[in-house]
Image (tube, rainbow, N blue to C red; front, side, top):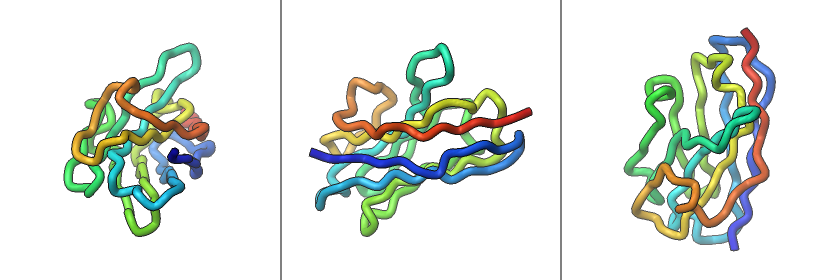
Length: 125
């Protein structure tokens, strides 16, 4: 069982930056590919980014490419989402998720086995 806890959300003006963190419990963090998803008000959960267990490969939603960066520090059991040039349409609850597989990232929420509680990101115009 892996427990995930997100932090770093908040209120920011358009064009600003935030860095989200997600800390995982356990000793096998590098065995889990990790993903970030978001859910805007009235909308379903949307894939944002994912990273393999080693950190060697990353994938992004097209609309965040060049603005968001996913990274991980396996020594700290932590995955990050650096968000720059934020837009009002980035407003959502952001969730981190873990897969019971290190080698393949996925853009589908049903491929993930563990989820955090989420952290709110609000971007004002």
